[in-house]
View 1 (cartoon, rainbow, N blue to C red):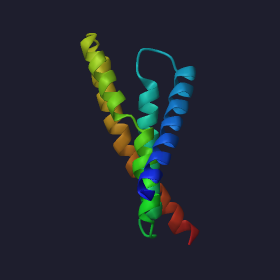
View 2: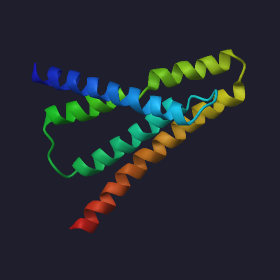
View 3: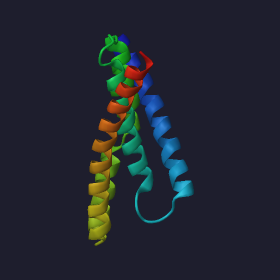
Length: 128
């Protein structure tokens, strides 16, 4: 039961963060391209890489892992929104923008996972 509570609390926080980051992104970057979703997916990937690198060598309780990785980051990132926006771009005939959306989300998210992981590893090594 405690795992469910951690999952729900993390999911609620992640959803609030997603709403805030996406809203701020749309406030400052306009246009037809789904910048808010890209920003959320890329920063979510950065955070998961960062946290994975941080906690890789240290024991992390299953409840905290559930809260952070499944709850917060699962609620924060937006794969289903990304998929829907990509489909809508294809349906509207904007193939160039749709392909750019697919490539940008996939490439940046993978790059940011590695970046977050290696950044925290460098920081941990330099702090020792």
